[in-house]
Amino acid sequence: MDSRKEEPALESGTGSFIPADSNESCAPGDDSQDIIRINRITKVFGNAPPLTAVDHVSFSVRRGEIFGLLGPNGAGKSTLIRILTTLMMPTSGTACVDRFDVGRDDERVRAIIGVCPQNSTLDVELTAYENLEFYGNLLNVDRDQLPARIWELLKMVNLSDRAHMPVRTFSGGMRRKLEIVRAFLHYPLILFLDEPTIGLDPEFRREVWQQVARLNTMNTTIILTTHYMDEAEKLCHRIAFMNQGRLVALDTPANLKKIIPTGELVEIGYGNGHYDPGVIPLIQAREAVLGVEVHEQLLRISAKNGSQALPGILDDLEQFGITARSITIRAPSLEDVFIYLTGTGLAGGRTE
Ligand code: ADP
Image (cartoon, rainbow, N blue to C red; front, side, top):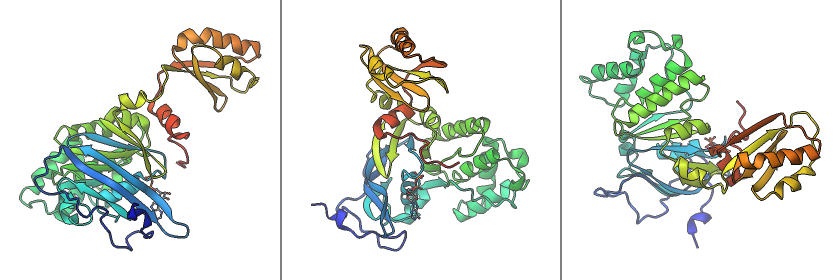
């Protein structure tokens, strides 16, 4: 029996970290291609009743990849990131960040990671340069090299001409880019970005994506959490789906999409018009049709070949007096895969 399951729930930061597998280590000389190795990490908050935010999660992140943690609000993404970045103790489980044990070698872990948290920690009264300078000193970046490094990073995000302006005059996107390169001041091996584009408009989101991709080309492993599937799909080499604290799937975006056993999705909207559920068995009986769901005035039909199946489906709708107001045929998206695996969408529960 796994004794770890018997461990009492610990409140954040109040208990001692008991390594689950004390014989496992992140020993020097380990030449694994995996830069992060997580083994059954669990985090339980409170005890009345206890809430399992991260539930026996195990996976590895490869050196040099952009790795996405994708899931709806409350899935446990930020908690896992807080554990890996040494800001929070897990209730049980182990994690290696490069050659160092999280919980035992925290100072060394912190020296090789850069962290860009979800909530801004810039001092808006300081200038862009001063913000980077302050952080560089905190990170013990060599004082002689710091000015050159700051200018290099400001240039990288096109903020050199605003170097001496207070951050309060910056747009949300500029602040975000400044925070991302701030986490990069000490040439970290791994960069953690928690929801890097939350609240940004599409133009700035794209700029942040370019920035993340550019940092990745400098041999930096990037771990990002997001609930935007387009972001994960564009940026990430591999994606871990999380839901209710659990790891649901982990693979490349292309392979994740293969999980859905269908060719295409045909979506037919009927708006506020007439609808009769009697049409469902008729559509379902068609040979090319694999499944039918009704969701918010929309029939979502999975079919082997959408355009071939469509005329027959429209005949069925006509028989039941249902008028198609919109028709879309598309390949399954990551969101569809997530719904297929969990029964809920990525936006589920979000309140923004
Ligand atoms: P995500 O980043 O995927 O939105 P979080 O890791 O922030 O999810 O949260 C996972 C769950 O843990 C949520 O139910 C959240 O309310 C809870 N949680 C997070 N931090 C704390 C905390 N410090 N104390 C108690 N519960 C927390």
